[in-house]
Image (tube, rainbow over all chains, first blue to last red; front, side):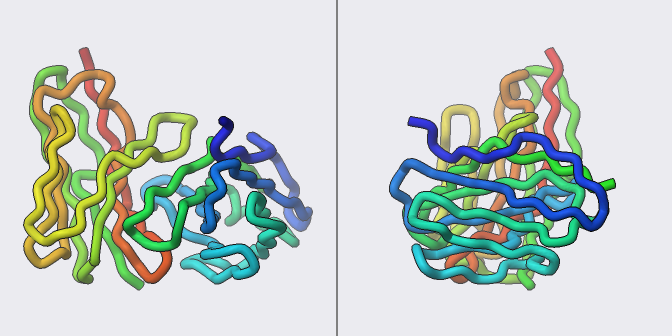
Length: 114
Length: 109
């Protein structure tokens, strides 16, 4: 039982390049989330998908797009990377949307934009 | 935007000491969660508190939700090196969580 998996684990991009971060969960969860984590700022929500077929903006959506490919997979795309997007990105999933549900996190993707 | 401020930001203590971490907001939350994150990993849920004034104990960890549901605290008794990590509180928003700024704890033997 893998839980939440993320690929890649590390990535270095040049300014202006694009890339897609992949996330998959095998817990049959309905809701999935993308966060970024910067020093001293905790976790900030980029986008989330409360259920298959829906996506919504979080706190910091600018410069990102998402796709809920199916119930298992939720990808995050950077169309034109900027140095300000250097961060650690976490994907999470939960059985339902809202604070009574535990969120399960992947191991993270460490992205550096030069 | 709902904000959750945690204090202190950093805490370095010796094994066996007690400590308290605070999570404060000007907003009311219907529930609040505490997560712990170890280096190189994602956060892991420790507890969820849902009722104002609620106290939950998890071995040496005691969690309290404020009466007004705007604040919470985490108290660790007799800290151990295994308690080292980043502690994050998270309040409930509509369909999502709002995470605090985090408290980084280092417990030295």
